[in-house]
Amino acid sequence: MELTEAPRSNRPFVERYGIGGFRISGKQWRGSVLILTNRVTPWSSAIHLATPQPLIDVLAADGVEMLIVGFGDSNRLIPAFVRNSFKEAGLMLEGMDTGAACRTYNLLAGERSAVGALLAALPER
Image (cartoon, rainbow, N blue to C red; front, top):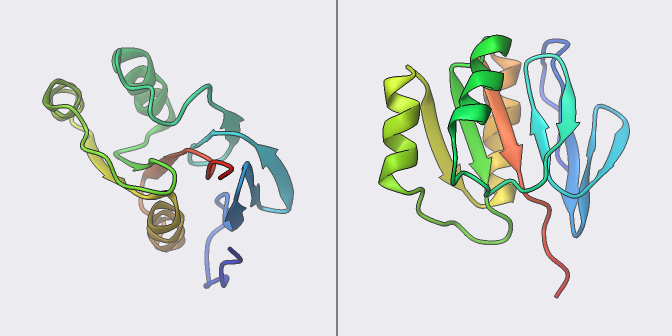
């Protein structure tokens, strides 16, 4: 799915998402990604939140205050212990399908919010 670019800062911008990956700020990415305030990095799994502290540490070091999680082609509930870990660290956490997560991230990043995104690529059917 191609996304329409809105006025934005120099933050990473999700231009396209689809089966297997993303195009972010002109670069193709295969698989899941973590978008921080000024960089994108591959992530082993956008839904791997079983041990949230390493992710919380990365987000805090980057100045991210809110993480948008894209779960692929459907939404999933984020376990309460994960939500509580983020809340205790002073971070907001929102989960949704990847399409909605891309759009929400782009909107908030364009407003210069301290937002990051953990996005699972859409699976092949």
